[in-house]
Length: 108
Ligand code: SF4
Image (cartoon, rainbow, N blue to C red; front, side, top):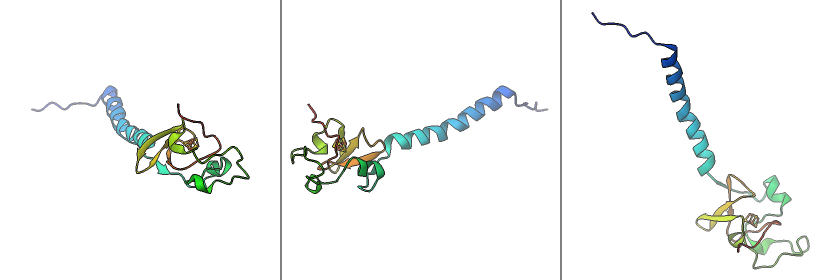
């Protein structure tokens, strides 16, 4: 005769933790690795005057801007692929290498 195994509370907790771990890691993984390209109309982008191309910077609104200021030589930028990269100011998004915003600081 086969003995029936009774599920203990410990078995249920272990199973629950295991079942919750995979979706949680999936969510965290998506936040850490997926980066959507920022839109120039994103509210933070608008507030910081972000543009995908420095040639589009409004010089009258941004008198300290010079054409050598680009996202890809900014301290906040880390290149990913295809001329885009992550920016600490826009978590979860990518910015364009030739882009610019008001908080540009040269990478040294
Ligand atoms: S902080 Fe630097 S990298 Fe980020 S959008 Fe502004 S200029 Fe580009």
